[in-house]
Length: 162
Image (cartoon, rainbow, N blue to C red; front, side, top):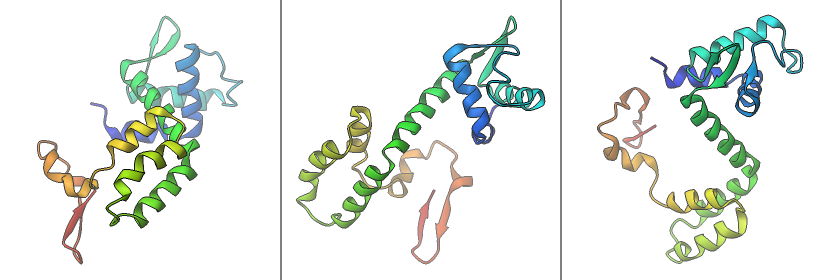
């Protein structure tokens, strides 16, 4: 069984991310691009093995391809990269939202603010949907998922958060 931890641990290495992107874009012959990626033979195969063990890559007839899970992970990895390209705009938006939390008129201004700061339509839609209370107030919505190992308690405020 593949775990979230194993996938994230695999993706935490920059060279492995580049290798995953290369496989996503080109497929990958068994030994192709090893030198172009700046990896030794051992490093290359170690990363291929970790991608395979994490369920992200499979080999068919001497060529590597993304698995279905690998395609989904690659898709969202690119979404995260797009969000990081807008990091300072998102940071500014957070700062403005935190300052205007108690302003009743702010709810009407928020869509215009998001539209003016964020060019990416998909990110705008996500941000507008997330204009709801933080996750810590919605823990009751995920009772069917075992999240207890990830929850911490702030004893000073008697709040639980992830």
